[in-house]
Length: 334
Ligand code: CO
Ligand code: ZN
Picture 1 (tube, rainbow, N blue to C red):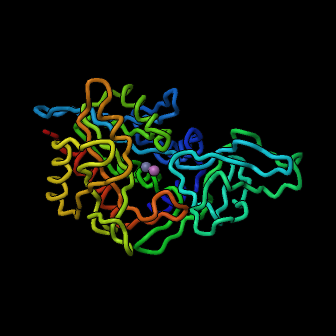
Picture 2: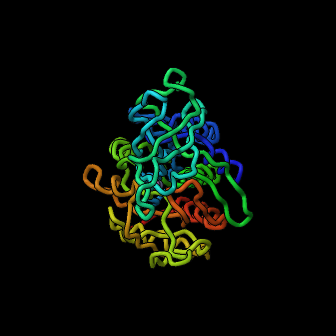
Picture 3: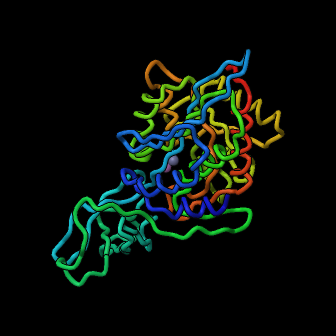
């Protein structure tokens, strides 16, 4: 699975530019789906049909992981060819200093900063610029509206993995691996790889409306409280998939939460509960779609989220796949 994770995390895909990520996923699921379609917002919707079994309630289940990653977008090009930019999603200015960004054509830019007047002042994005190494505006090769994202290679530390965009390519990898491993299911399972999560769960909003699920599980990253002086949080790397109870955007459906817990206990998989003070996931949009969807979230504990070097534990990833496989291969009653 590490090869797929490496390829997915190294692929370029700031929000609104998910095509390359979608291609990697389409390639990796070939031959495993009963139906594949792409909607107007670019969501990749992959159906695995259920085997009808007597006496088993077939449910319409949607799994969602977002393909997009945070990035920056050119807002102005000056006479000397320096680019000013705005954020795509939640970009923290300190993570930009010393970073390199990559544009859709593979070209690289480095982030520079205006002279520091007050050394104690937090770095601000409007005092930064991208330098693409052009001698003047005529050779800059970039226009307003060009998007870029962090560029960093995937690193395998053994038990732990480091990459840009684990948020949420690790969720995409978990969904792909679950589809490949799901021999039979009594349910119609929609694996949905969504767009534009980082700018306001927009792909999940339209895809949930289109898929019209009864039950949904979003798979995304969550923060941890296990680093020096971290904000207090019960989630730790390596302690198992995190079952969401609450975040800024939603309360998980209790039935779905309990379905995850009872499956983890039946399979003797480690798990932890998650209460997240900041942020949310696609689950928030799916839950309030149409007349409402019973929605839970499976979170992969991740350190340094929204930095160019996010870190996950490989066992958490594998256990997340096992948990989903266990959930989907049996009947559900919420
Ligand atoms: Co994010
Ligand atoms: Zn995410």
